[in-house]
Length: 454
Image (cartoon, rainbow, N blue to C red; front, side):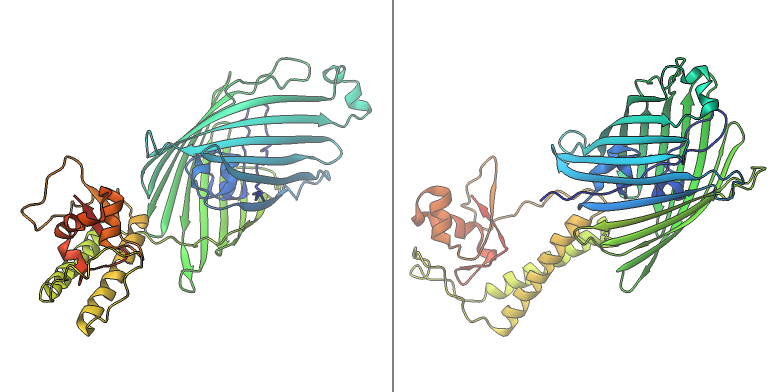
């Protein structure tokens, strides 16, 4: 069964025909950012490169309330849906939005987005592409029918495409670029009017509980326009990091007297999130009532509200602790009697667990817990993983090979079994034993330990 994610998109800002058209989702709207914010399915409609970070299928619905104080009775419609699915080594997103003025104008937008991280080529880079199909239709009254613009048709449809990219300096610093309307489609009903190409630059910076999102949008047309926005978000965690609240504040300034102030908040659990945002223009001479957005998101699989990260320094501290514990075990087991050849005879049955002394049992339990912590820490590290240290052997007769092999012990492994697997002869078990004396306890292999295969 394929899970679909539902998403939202965009509100128009009214103004002169040469003013830049602004697209908003509830997430983007409250933060005034279109590029570097990558923790939302709004990437389907905004920068598709951010899709790489979606972890589970999600479903989202957004409702927009636009200019409720207009005195001429004008009513706007703005509702959005979207979906995504893992496909082609990346994530494919599908979105739909309907915007318009009731009884006058409707614009339906369908978007197909694809994004992926280039792990094999450039690990810190993600790329995305977005294809958009728009269909605009006008309900003609007697006055509009006399207008030569509508003499041939009252509707128009067109395609456009956009390219996006993200560069991840580290977990807390992202740089994004988005090129919109590459083909500059014709949107004129009567004359040739091309949508201008837009270039977006965005940046994400996170410090402790604060996120900052500066963003610059440039529109290339006969009269070049620009919008610069600066947004902040603060994070509060409650109930042992199971609930997150994120109030936000944003300001924007642009050409042609564009200005905006936005306030909003987000409420997150492991599967449900709700966002609200309100924006108004402080320079507007008309009380329009501003713009409001409401969005509700549901994740089909639970995801931690706050993923705990571990620094490189903390990781090395755990690694040192593990090495010290292994030395203690090695020192303890060296005092135990060596296993006889009969104990290491090949057998088809897995070795029976031996009774361990209290000290040995405690040390092994600590090592097991520490190895588990290290495994979790590797997936949460902020910086790149350090290169694994090469195991050393204590035997002077250990043959040298250009490339070493390693085997992680699982339940049921024995030295003869491993010798048969790697050398084709179970009687060669001593080669493995001599190279890993410090990791073999009374002839028994410890599940989870890593053995060198000489």
